[in-house]
Length: 123
Image (cartoon, rainbow, N blue to C red; front, side, top):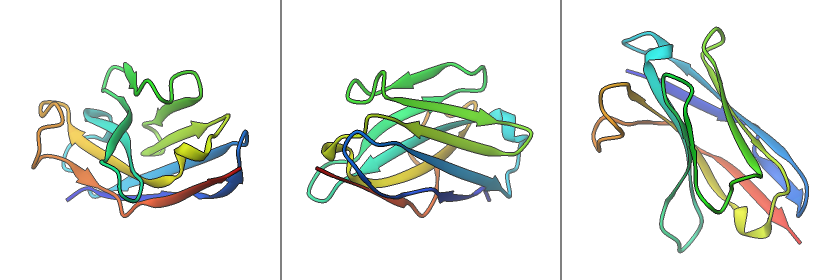
């Protein structure tokens, strides 16, 4: 059972930066065999896939964060990162780390979730 623990959330003013981390443990396969991602959910809004990174290092980003957010993965440390720059008020949300085995293509039921970390951006 994969366990994911996020950290690094907090409150920041618009234009500022935060770096989220996600430490993984309890994985069945090698950590490098998991696709990882960050998702977020704001109150009253649908959840959003923010960014993902697959086992080859290929990344995807939501249009709303392109050019501002960067996902990275350290397989030696079993840790996922999200560098968030030029933060906007609309980035305020609970951010969740997620993992899925390389073969699952983010299929529902095959995703492991962290407990979330709150990011609040004020104007």
